[in-house]
Length: 435
Image (cartoon, rainbow, N blue to C red; front, side):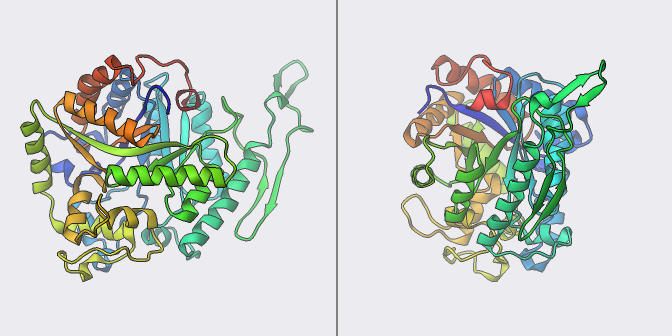
């Protein structure tokens, strides 16, 4: 384990954070911030002041319609709707900072490897190497239908398709050696055409014939991120990811998942342990009782329908058909099997009821909460980091921007004073921050 932990801040370009109905809380400013460049740039500058590795944009590109077979609850409560594109925000926030990294989610559903490479690499070039791509394999049925996709893959076949998708991306990134770009006005020659290779790929699912449309970035390609936690997902992550995100509902799940990822790395012949970040949600107060009241207040306004609308979409099952007080068994799904497994059991391995699972998902999509004073939150974060042996954490806010400001101003200095988090950046790119 490294001497210092890594921290990312999870954001969503929507009315709500992971905390459902956060937009209805008097403290929240994100609904107004959706049309305000300054809102997002202020958060970016705050996170850079706090020396965070990166902002991480989670994304649900289409509105869940599994619950009761429609989008009504999602739209009524603003549960994963609206679905604004995070890509423009990355550019806006990067323009206000110099070192803060950015991870942006882009699905392999609804785009092509060429367009994905073009969008991500343009941002990486503009920011001089501060971009990471969170590769998701498009488990949402709503996303497939919204894009008119003719592919209806099983869980594992989604990863087979994504492997081929990434093969094209790698070939595009490799088409232009850095020293082939001469930019010599005296010749005149912008680049040496004999050294710029053309991709001519035809696979089982995809084709591409082109050269890469973007100049080489600071490190040749962006940092790659992935969150697969099923057996097939871990295999994909070992092959492609520089950073792995994990969502586990408790510390026991984090420890088990870390051990599984380390074993997967050994099985894949990877010589080093994977860089793994787990989701956490801090909820701060001046006293422990005040912090708990804040958490209770946030969850009290959330109807069960709003939670089940989001949870149904992620798990791929219409949960309106189940009794909320029955056990949520680990059902087979073609959606997210890793999240299904993490949701269906408690720390002691016992099954949880649907109502209990819903309470976990109301504020933080099954990410554990750390509720207390800044000192208590710092204690617990350090304790979990040491116990799990992970690289660090991806923090999910409740309301914004106060969650971000409070953590940076109240918790980061405590972690810095203990020597477990950086006081200043030693590099300028996301790869230098993380690797």
